[in-house]
Figure (tube, rainbow, N blue to C red):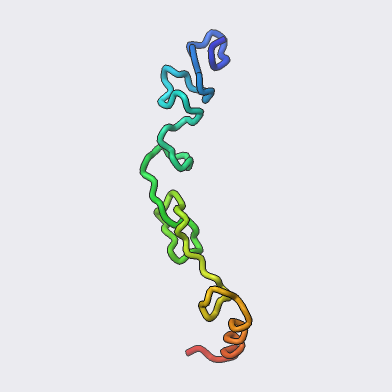
Amino acid sequence: VDALGVCGGPCEEDLDGDGICDDIDPCVGSPATCCSDFNTNGLCDNEEVVGCTYAAAPNYNPDATMDDGSCLLTCTGDLNGDGIIQLTDLLDFLTSYGNSCN
């Protein structure tokens, strides 16, 4: 039985246990099957595009492959823009409730 458990197989060693023989493993010493997938998205590349990956954010970047924490999330109930949902937001809403928008 070889290192991969194959009876009479040619694999002498699989030190990292990733199921790839060390003589052909591009990344010996790592259980990953891909050495250059730094964001673990399954793409073997070093060309990660960082940015906002949350589609509902106003600064969403559809090209981003790795979220960098830059997403700007709006607070939908904060009508006066002070960063807090409170009574003044409700009063602002009630003041304009029923008005027509032209």
